[in-house]
Length: 110
Length: 116
Image (cartoon, rainbow over the protein chains, first blue to last red):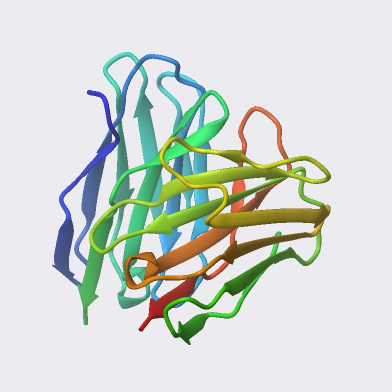
């Protein structure tokens, strides 16, 4: 993998459903993997920064895992709520800059 | 949390004019600021990295004479799109970092530039 890839591109779920998305990244020159949450017309907000293989981070109903050897990270949202609707970006911290994926756009319907 | 303010949020200008976008870190001093550009349905693409008091480092393919970056203080960086043309119409967004290994970046809300 040469670029940062995210899947799916978009996701529609019902309130209360749990969901997850994937970020794939090059496993070479790895410094860190970032997840951001970006609501429309607002600033992207940092969710997690993970550096070690096997890292797991959690913030409320949102959690993330990291596998640096195979180059992927999962973001999980438990019991989705309408306020979780946003675009979720991951970024590979490669030496001195962040390389972003195109994001997963999540819409949660009440 | 760290707050970054970016202005204007939207600008419409005529072809040939120059447009300045400001990026301010409101409650912290940023070691480094970054400027990104995003085309529809594409990822944030880094244009340049800016350190206070020194020349910006531009990514390959980004014209430094077209996109002038000034980083006069630890809390302010500006991007000037000179002699804007319709192909410069895009979404521009800045971020500021405190540095360190994790390189957490705090983003502005972006500027939508439309060149007529």
